[in-house]
Length: 102
Length: 98
Picture 1 (cartoon, each protein chain N blue to C red):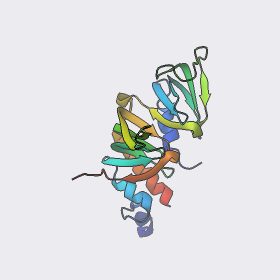
Picture 2 (cartoon, each protein chain N blue to C red):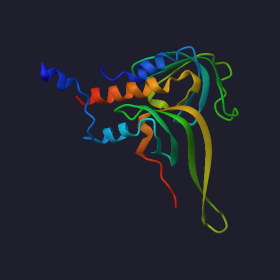
Picture 3 (tube, rainbow over the protein chains, first blue to last red):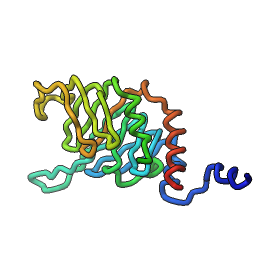
Picture 4 (cartoon, chains in turn green, blue):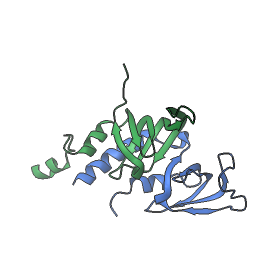
């Protein structure tokens, strides 16, 4: 009887990497994706494939343009806002708390 | 088939309008008709959202999209119960560990 109760208790310890993501549910997170894309949004759901539902999302796409004359690299970023977004996990590279800059 | 969180979630959105962004940068707006365990999507009454610089699918009304080519799906925020989702995600995460 006692064993059954123990097994039913939820494990709240952080054991594996996906547990770290569980701690971020309902928090804002930063997601780095393939193709120089980044997302910042509130994590509502995720699974082991890293499929995610994010709310209040800002997507940043960074492109590098080469100036023909000077050959210098110009970094440009395009942003857009999406209220609620499903993200397919196979594009995800990194998941972290939002980065703070100075 | 164990993990079905997102399959169930999409099933609850059948009939709603969504925008599916593909990995080839094509964005398709349409009504979610059906979804399967692979998150393949069938959309009806589709239109291409971004200025029609991408394949003009003027004559196409319905389409089947292979789940693996989907990048994002833009969802109607007010149709989504975020509290329910978060609880379901917690449960699913713990289920996956065992």
